[in-house]
Amino acid sequence: MTRQYPFPELSGFISVGIVLVFAFSALFVLNNILKSEGTIKKLFILNIAFLIVLVPYSIFLKGNDLGIALRFFIILVLVLTSFFLPRKKFFVNAFLVIATLHSLFIIIFELYIVFFSDPAFQTHIRNTVLHLGLGDIYTYNGYFYRIQIKGNAILPIAFLVSLFAITEKRLKVTVATILFLGTFIAGNLAFLVAIAAYFLFYLFIYLFKLLRSKREMVKGKFFKDVKRTVISLTVLISFTLAICIPMFNYLNDVIVRKSEYSIPARFDQVEVLFDDLFESPSSALFGQGLGNTLQVETEYRDYTNNTYFELQTLYILNQVGILYMILFVITKAFFVYKFWNNSKVYVLYGCYLLYALSNPYVFDTTNIIILIVLSSLNKLLTKEGTFNEGKV
Image (tube, rainbow, N blue to C red):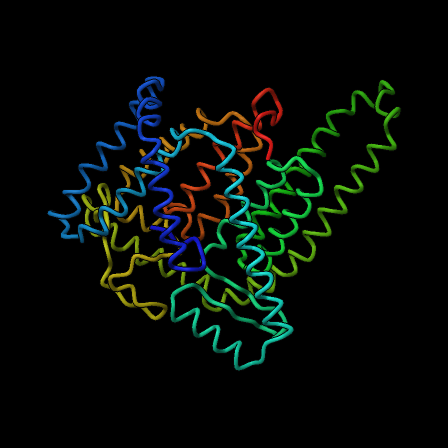
């Protein structure tokens, strides 16, 4: 159910922890659903009913494995149900603590590999990580190692959340720095694109507001504070460029390397999943069933009985079909709009989706955790415009 953390035991613990959160909040969730406005309640019930029908369709008509089918059924249900959970600052705190510890782990490990280990250890640790299915650790130049292990998916969004959730300045800078370094060491192109997009978005907003103040400039009001404005703008642009220029150079290098295998492999997944989905008109509408596995082997990968796809969203589409995917997207978008009311949270989730859609982080425990955390953060940010009782 989860691919989030670097050790299988902890991964299982996280999955059990999430199940317990839902179990202990069952009455609260049920009450929340019953008290919801008509459209929310109807959409939720319609989704559950559709998924319940998909289970026998998947098992008896499509012959899919019961265990795998139920696994994806539970994930889809929990993604929508997470909006009805209680919103607590504990969820934000726990998330940032776990993400910071994970980031510290890969930072320390990076330093050890670079400065204290020998080539034999580097080869051994990579083979071990690959053998255990925890990810990969590799280098292109022998100086910088990309530590791409389970759990890295929470680092970029945790970095962005820390900018809003932590009010004490020194703690904010410390935690944000640790999370950013961990994100960089993770070496995932999409992570860095999401962070760059976040800063560019707010730079654009700042410049847009500055241009709108042109009328005030004519009146002379702007010039009373021109020095502070110029300094603020200079610092903001310099900070953004300091991050984005090296990042874009790095991204260019990564894109060149990814064009050799990673990007073509994703296009291969698109072709394989779509070919299977559009096998017939009925499969296009209703999918190949929850838990569907392929019996296909290409030059890039053997997909036989595999449930792991980087383009996870397309894999879910392959399982549930066009009809339910449209219903799910509409429902989730409506829930985001109705349950959240803070623009910062919308931006954070947008940045998360920016890197999640090209990676397997949309229909798994990561997304459930992020929805719980952002729902709690939304409450903290909107309560009387401050954190008040929700300070981290």
